[in-house]
Image (cartoon, rainbow, N blue to C red; front, side, top):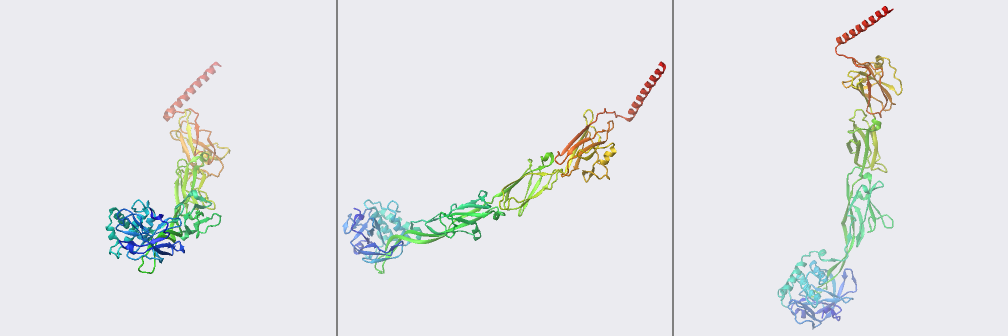
Length: 611
């Protein structure tokens, strides 16, 4: 029959751990809660007289004497007085003796004195976990709790008063444990004592019943280009908490405090000295603050107060030095200032802008690709060079927002085109910065025009040695030239490597065909702002055996959008005259003349005779 079924005892019976006759000589008392209790346990307990109650399990069997009635035969070598109380629900609550060599405080009021040592506290609270969760259990059928109560009370005496001796036989508790008939029981006591001694401070032995949580959600706030809104890098976070009050959130470095903002559930502004778990908080960094940064990180701290409530063991006693102290579990509430208990790392990776464009020349109706053209993009603390690819495209990326940039053409490998393009770009700054700027097609105006001239004979073979000059006329203006001298007078001259008009004080530029009948006029200077011109390639000297052409080659409507090289050709319609030796040519000419003259004279003579 289990002890707790005896409803006759409504109060706690208190006596110390005894050896032999000590249990019989000590008065038994009953402990009750005082009326004026608080969260830290009752301030005092009252003890009343009670009859003998004890328990022993030293031989591995349960032996109980309750109100002078044997529950099970046998006393055993080590007896523990039973201390317990029934609560309003009829549940038992056991209490433990601290001293070993003193009398029980019979019929007295005991006051709360202090919190038990970590070792004793752990034993008291571990017992409360119940049979299936205790560190050790005797697992004796009949009354598991009562048997384990004897086991834990034995361990408490070995921990709390290892040097106290029984006034009956001068034995310590450990002396009695060594005489236990059951080795298994003896080993369980030792294991329990060794485990208790591992708990060196209060926090290791108490049992917290209202764990506090204070953390950030998320713990790392990564802010990037996708969080760029309204000229700010913004992202939200929360600070969920449990059993906390007066929660505060602040930047670790006060200069970053300006980046924190938020609203409460009702729409009001957040007070960062009193944060609620459902407040909507955010980090908001103006993009201008990131202009000269490739990365920006700072920490946000959360602090608060936790009214921690924990199960602990209290020591009760009185002022009589002959009376023993007793331990009972209770609650302890303390306010814990959780400083720096949680933090969040904020990483701001700024958004970067991009500037791209296509580079072409004005030739071929603004379709001339200019690969290899070099550009330089500069800004305060920034400089980058790019080269036009074979598709004519240039892209400057990873450009920090908030900067005013300057784009300048620094190298133009195609000598026919101007290489002086430059402009300011401020679209990546201002009140609404763009992140992707396409400048479209940037056209370089043509500076020089080239002409290719070909002269062929009637058989489409190139004529070597033909000489030409180039004349420029306004579009649709006629060319009135009657002699090569006039052509040379109007022809273009070469000045500093350029073919230009005017400069009549210099010799005209003459281009001569090669063995394939080809020649060219290169670097003909043009003004991109001028209207189209007509150009004429006029032959001023033909090679031996060919007639001088009376019709010039017309190259009309030439402007900056014309192809880079404009071609023209001339075909000679005369039969080639042999040119192999001047004497042979003279002989052939004289012979021919004689033949013609003889034939003519003969014909004239015959006509006279007829008449």
